[in-house]
Image (tube, rainbow, N blue to C red; front, side):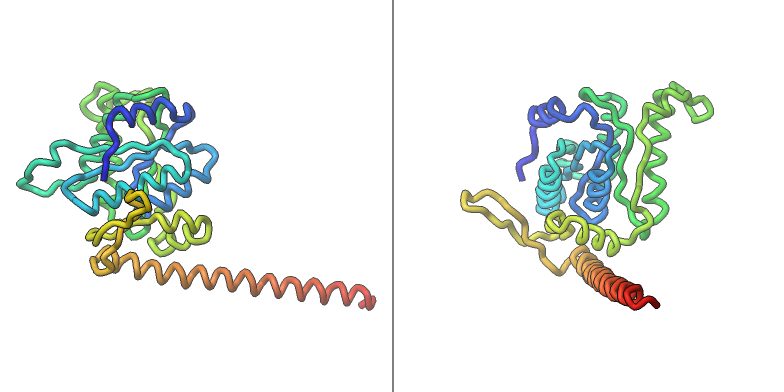
Length: 267
């Protein structure tokens, strides 16, 4: 996977809509895809899409970066990769990608790159996430507000600093993974085809000019199993939804016809 250079990202910043106001992390997973779909359908949100690329994840990182960029391009949104160079050297302890990603986000907020300011941080969480997942974003926001307020703890924060730091928006946190998949299937089937979750991709698909056009999931890893289970529930739900609409539509038509016949007969 060819990662965007700093020059390419600078071009994206320069050409971005000046109304850009939301930092939108993309992984191409179900949650971030559903949150992206929500963001593009909200007329007040203008996302900047970013993928936290982690080279030590190998093919999984490449596949996530590929589909994340594909999703951003699908909606015509600005996109950039963020990566930590330190992650390319050996580790004595595993460091989750979210640590590097949120550090990059903090740099964006404090440094205010480009001609726009972020009003929101779009979080792709779901109803099944634990409290640690939900609360860790809040702590990063606290650190930034305290820094901009030039205080050691939050007893000294100022309102300007609070307004300066993006608010966390987690608009779909009441939905399960399967419910999010159902939402994507019903509202944007093409976007559904750009979801990626497999951690052990088995290779790449190539176009006529030998360019990469997709990745091949293993179908066996725990993330594939998780996706398959959620996918079945989502497809069943979409079927029930469509059948229900068709049933009530037919029922309504029959009811209307009966009403008209009764009116004609004077009853």
